[in-house]
Every structure is written in C-alpha cells, then in structure tokens.
Image (cartoon, rainbow, N blue to C red; front, side, top):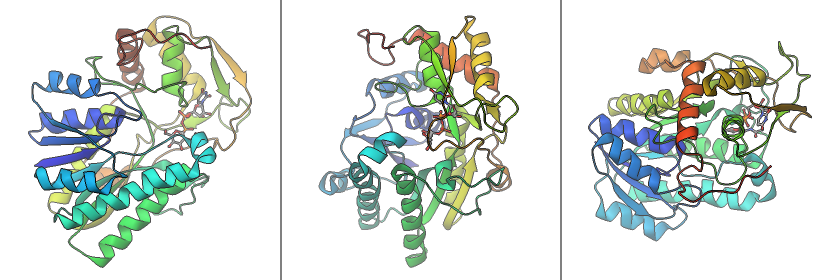
Length: 344
Ligand code: UD1
C-alpha cells in the first residue's frame, strides 16, 4: 500500500515508517520539522535500503495538504503529527487546539475530498485522565485533565462522528502508553528538542553526561517503592502495532480502539536501576516533589489488541534500556552533528 505518514520525522513515526518500508509498503511523509529532524528519515532509508518521499508541509495549511493528495497516490494515512507536551499545552492551549484539532480536521477534509478513508490515529493513554481502574480497558470512561489530552480526546470523538456519518471510513485509534527504546541499530531514536519532559530521555541524557541528575517526581505514592509506576512499551513493538492495525483495516470498516501497552508496570526507581545496568554506569538521582497532574499508576490492559490483531509487546525492560542507551551513546547530541551544550 501507499501510506501517507504525517509527523513521520518524529520518534514513533520514524520507527513505524521503517517497519512499513520493510513490510513492502511505500511511504510519503509530511512533516513541518517543528520538533523533529529530516536526518531521521535519511537514516530510516539507510536501514531499510529503500527510498521514501518527503514533503515539508504543515497540516494546519489546508492548501498544502490538498496539494499533497493531488500529487501523490495514497491508500491510507497514519497520523502522528501533533504537539505533545502537557505543560506547554496548559500555557498555550490555542496553539495545541490549532495544531492538533484543526490540523486533523484539515487532514480529514483532504482525505475525504480525495477518496482516502483509511486512517490510523496516534491517540494516547492520556485520554483516560486520572481514571484509577487498573489495568485500563478501552471501554473505560475518558476524562483527559489537560489541553494536550483533551486534543487527543476531541480528535477521537471527531473520528467517531465522521465514521458514523459515512460507513466507508476505516479508523484505528491507538492509545499509546509510555513509548521508549530505539531501533536496535542505534541509528534512530528519540531526540527531544530542549529539556526532555519524559523519564526515559531524561535518564539517558544523565547517563551520557548531558545532564547532572534525574529528579524523581514523588516517592510517597501508594506503589511498592513509592515512585510512579508506568506501562513502558518499546517503540519497535509500537511500530509493529501500527502495521497490525493497518492490516486489520484492510478488511474491517468502522472505528476500532486499541490500547498499545505491555500490561507490565515499572517504577521510576526500577527504570533508573535497569538503565544503570544497560549503560554500565551509575545514574545520580534526587527524590523530588510530585509533578502536578501525575497519576500514581498507569497500566494498560492490552488484551483487545492481542484478540483482534494478534499483537502483543515482545520486548523487555532490558531491551528497552539497552536500545535507548545504544542510541544515546552513539548519538550524544541526537540527530544534530554540532554539540549541544550540557544543561544542568
Ligand atoms: C507523560 C504525559 C502524558 C503523555 C506522555 C507521553 C504528564 C503528566 N503526562 O506521561 O500525557 O501522553 O508523557 O508523552 O506529563 N518522572 C520522573 N522524573 C522525570 C520525568 C518523569 O520522576 O524527569 C516520572 C513521572 O512522575 C512518572 C514517570 O516518570 O511517574 C513517567 O513520566 P513520563 O515519562 O513523563 O510519562 P507520563 O507522565 O506517564
């Protein structure tokens, strides 16, 4: 199939495109490079030994999007493009709604106008908000607690309404838990611009010496060691989940929602210890206050994805840490070649 991938230069997009190319699909990538580097796609092509088409365009520009569909054959779309920092979304809600919600509306209108009605959407476990029922199942109540999460929830609702109005649409809503790790080659991985908000990139930047110490946000949670527990999912497993969802849509109409998680929980301290083993060095940390808005535990029930797609997470905490470390060690400055000054 010919797959249009929005936001394909980013972390999850680049790993998924590699999987698509290796599976014999063709990829056209649209990205505005606002939070990613084109270098990621050069490396994807190098690993795959195949070429893709890259178009620098912004999904908030409907004219540019229409041009993409006019000039490139597309059978299905995987939609990753979006802003994703919770704190920033609280400061700049309009930018988040414009990029994520308006951008998606533009994409859906262009798809409809060009008779493309198969879509895999990057949703997030964040739509469950602070729902305490663990593990989380797809049918549980949603209640995102910040503008970023609400953009994901609103887009899910828009997709459901659209499919109800026209049964020709085929949609997969993939709710990611905590994506980590990197391709085992160490050539592609996560490359956040500025200080990382998420645990794994922060820990790996401390391990490589770009930052001094990890702040552990909260050590008095009702969890075995008092630190937050999350369901970490290797990005290679996540990439396989997208490809399985796409296959499923080739013979199923409707809207289908799947959690993509491992179903296993790990605490912040477990992550630090496991990363220390992978990197062979100690990682200084400091017990700090809770981060506002954080839940004590977040865990997926991934059984629907296994039932419908035959997909389940195959990687381990060891491989998540080893692959993250290989990427970080080989690319201390991410995709940039010039050194990024160490920031405490
Ligand atoms: C966060 C977002 C979530 C988003 C997801 C993926 C919040 C409240 N949630 O999830 O909406 O979908 O990222 O982008 O921001 N931690 C530390 N020190 C750090 C960073 C994190 O102790 O420097 C802890 C957190 O308190 C948490 C765990 O590590 O217990 C994982 O944090 P993180 O990687 O930011 O993911 P989430 O908070 O689960």
